[in-house]
Length: 301
Length: 298
Image (cartoon, rainbow over all chains, first blue to last red; front, side, top):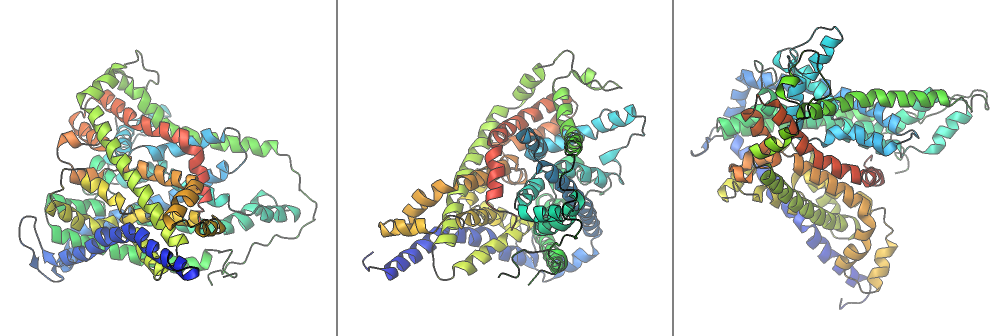
């Protein structure tokens, strides 16, 4: 303030800039960077809560490789991700396309399709336990009325994960909202250009909508994969990992190790392996994205 | 650099052909598709509400009935008094309100700094902070738990609320990103005019940028509120005393205790869902607009 002109303004900005970013920076140090380092250190120890940590080097990691349940949980989680992510992407894209039309009662339609996303995770789980109930559940009641064979759903080893995939698709709202935002950003004039050239709805979709939406599709794909790899609630409340470990999802296994068996060191190693898996998958997705994600601004920058 | 797929190019056909098409047919299809999607989306809710209003006996009849007779309203009163749901509701609201306030305030302050104030290392700092979004929560879970344990904060609301006052900490940094994107769309001339009038950066933030950012703030508010309202793992880890339970915990323990009393369980679930649906219904216009305006797509 004492110095007039630009340099005074610059100093003011610098001082306030650091001050205003401080909570975020401290948050990162205290709740992300610090715990990350600690987690890695923990993962190199044999440490039960209450006891003293004992350094074991990579012992936890080699033990992991031999742990059958680790592989079970990894494959259950992968299965779930491979099923849930594409299904959610397709359903939410289709609904977003519909909601992007000029239809009557748009707020009502939007609310309907977003509703399931609002249901608290645990209420959701309770609701679906009831829907999957083999004797009196909604699903089997409808199937029986239609004269179709009923299933055991989450109580059947081979049906448990497909059931949870169906359940996860119900909550497609967040993905849909982001698609909707993307669709509204597609320039009108491109559609007009196709129409003038005599292209119909299919051409408009294939040559304008889809290429312009690839960044949004990519974003939802990455967020979806990272999210489904961390699925927890269903396994904890609904199936407790069963039947016969069919739904022993990775983070649920980790939770059990840390907070039931008190094996903090081993659980930390599990966390780090998950982290590395996610890093590798994201890296591969990003590299693959170059082939199909179209950025309008790419040339301009 | 990344564009490989060619920009869309329309085939050249007769220039005036097919510009106008009968529209009614297509519109009807759209409504039909919307309806076809809405039925399976709403069916579980209908099933929930009908079960919440039934006597157990009626719930278990072989061809399922859809209309409760009689309407068993007492399920609600009994379910909500079987456990101190009112207390759980108050606890959840306290945690949610403190978290929303902290997140909105500290995230927007940080977003302002990262978008409209120039300081050395700004962009690098922002990139580093943003990397936290990709980190699986499982990695920080155990050390954070141990930290709160060492600080004697277990079984308090502190672990569930304090991180939000540090810009949401961890994945919450996404809010900083979202707000920053929005702030960048506000003309910088406004700031300059205020600075010439002798305003401080805080004043510019509070009286210029914040009032213009309502849609983005509504989005962050709703996301954070829903996130806290629905959080299960956090309260599960940190709260032991039933007096401090949130609705999620209450419902989860209800599920295991009252496994047989489905009517109560359904009524309790409906009561937990209702407030958040009401909130969304009134805010949904701002919400969709806000998401569109903040340009999440890039």
